[in-house]
Image 1 (cartoon, chains in turn purple, yellow):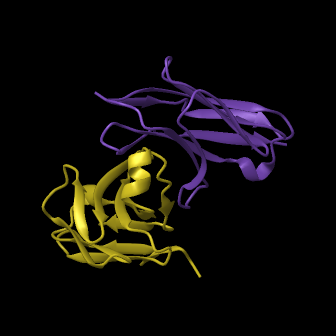
Image 2: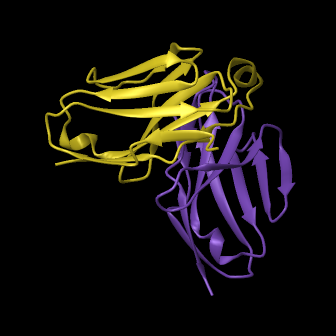
Length: 109
Length: 118
């Protein structure tokens, strides 16, 4: 079956750096997405990786290793507004998005 | 000028009732989706339409019927509501087929409809 694994919850301190990991097993691979979802709101797009390596976008970076079925989202200079759930999603060979359950990130002052 | 809008935002109803959720996107996208997010926060795709035609129909009870009058709208009608239907339902849209083939199709989500069945 298809599977996306992420930690359920993480806690970090304002101003620090946090890495949220995602491992996946899917039938085929057409890219990996990271979405941010604040409580009670819709998911919003953060990043897309289809090739191995690191994609940097401001305070957020996303890394992909296709051979390991692994990605991480790196958040730097954490702010209180970064408290949210971070969803990893993989597009499979049928171009369908398979979603992880999300990682709830709690930022403490 | 909301990109993807849904109505209503909250819906509380009794078991056995029939209800509809409306979705509209003004992004000019070709593809629209309905997702269900349950209490465990898993996002599960229910339907996908491309240019008014159904392209994905996951294992969803027949009580759920999507209707796409045009490519900017995808409404969800639910018959004979059950307790297990309680969830947040998200509508989303994306550019469509070409981007899907490239594998880079970013989806834009509506604000969600919180359905509570009593």
